[in-house]
Image 1 (tube, rainbow, N blue to C red):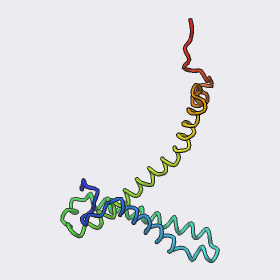
Image 2: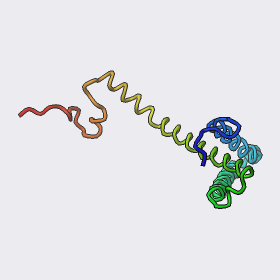
Image 3: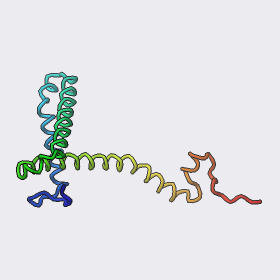
Image 4: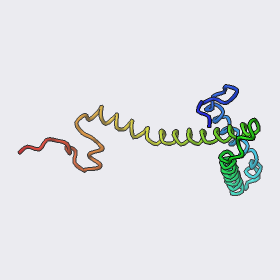
Length: 140
């Protein structure tokens, strides 16, 4: 396995991953766009799902090929397959990270707004413990 983040030609793997993602979406959409044009929206969605399943199947086969004991014998012929596999996996990881970031950003902004407007009141404690002064000192 490679440990660097560039392919053989020095292009960053992130750039290749984003390019592969854009090309996959374009190929899948353009391949079934005719269905959408004639009003077959269910066939359009079904075609997109079929394309996605085919890419998942090919990725699974590529992972098995890369892990096989015969893969190192391919040398130059196996490099494009390895790069294609790594680019797809990195694109998946980037999309997952972006989804997590997009989901948590509003909550973080809301918490920052809460800290600025009401420094002594924690909205989190109010929602979880139903007590705004949960951490307040108890007097004996």
